[in-house]
Image 1: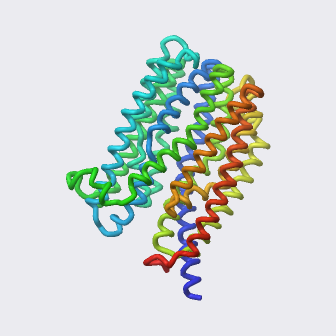
Image 2: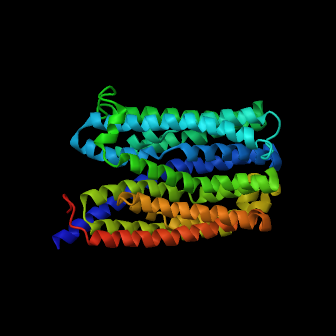
Length: 448
C-alpha cells in the first residue's frame, strides 16, 4: 500500500509540475496571443492580401530553413545535464552546454548557405518581387543567428519556466512595437521584416541573459576541457541529437513547406490566406507545444527515478488534460473563428475561414496526442518516434501533391487532417507498446 501511494504521489507531483510549468509558458504565450492579434491586424491591413502573401513566403522560407538545420539542443541539455546537475559536476554540465552551442553555430552557417541557394534557385517561382531576394536572405540569417535552444535547455533544466516565459514574450512585444514603428516609418514588406528580425534578436538576448544568470555558480568553468569531450562523457548523445533534429525538422517542415507549395501552385494570395489561417489555428492550439515541453521534462525525470506505474499514471493524466483542451479549442474555432478572422484581418481575408476550420481540427488532433512523442523520447525510443514522424511527413507532402492541384488550398488543409490522424494512431500504438515493454523489464535502480 505504501508503495502504491509513493508511486501515485510521484505521478501527482510530476503532473503538478507539468501544470505549473505549462502555466508559466501559457502566461508568456497568452501575452503573445493577445499582441499577435494586434500586430497581425496591422500587417494584414497595411500590406493587403498579395503583399502579405509575399511577406508570409519570406517568413515561411526562413522557418523552413531554421527547422531543417536547427537541433532541439534544449532536450540534450535537459536529458544529459540532469545527471551532472544531480552529481554537482558543473564542469561536465558546462561541456554539454558548449557542445550544444557548437551545434547551434554550425546550424546557423548551414542555414545561411541553404537560404542563399533556395533564394537564387526559386526566388522567381515564389514571386517575391524585385529586390526582395537580398532582404529575404538577410532575414533568414537573423533567424539563424538567433537560434536559442541551448539557453532554453538551461532554464528548463533548472525548472525556471517562469524565466523562459519572460524571455519568450520578447518576440510578441518586439513585433508589436516594431509593427507600430514600421506602420509609421516604413509601411511595407521591408519595414515589417526589420521589425520581425529585431524581435528575434531581442528574444535571443533575453534568453541568454536569464540562462547565464540562473546558471551562475552551477554551470562550472567555461574552460574546463573541450566541448567535444561531451560526446565521450555522455554515451548516446550524438544519436539522440540526430534523432531529435530529424524529428523536429520533419514535423515542423511539413507545415512550413505547405505555405511555400501553396505559393508555387496558387501564388502569393493563396499563400497569404493559407498562412493567416494556419497561424490563427496554431495560436488557438499553442497549448500543444507548451504541454509537450513540460511533459518531456517530467517524463524524463519520472522514468529515471520512479517505476513504470508512476510513468503510466503521469502519462494518463496528461492524456486526459490534452483531450479536454482539444475539445474546448475545437468549440472555440467553430463559435468565434469567423468573426475573429474578420475582426483581425478584414473582409478580404474571410475566404480563409474554411482553411481555419480544417487546420484547426488538424492542430487539435495533434494536441490530443501531445503526450505520445515525449514518452517515446523519454523511454529511449527516439528512433521509433523519428520513423513515425518521417512516415507522417511523407504522407502529408504526398497528400498535398495530390489534393492541392485538385482542390487548391482546401486540399492542402485536408492533407493536414489526414496526416494528423495517421500520426495520432501510430504514436498511440507505439506508446502502448513502449509501456508494455517496460512492464517486462526489471525495476530500475532508485525506483520507488
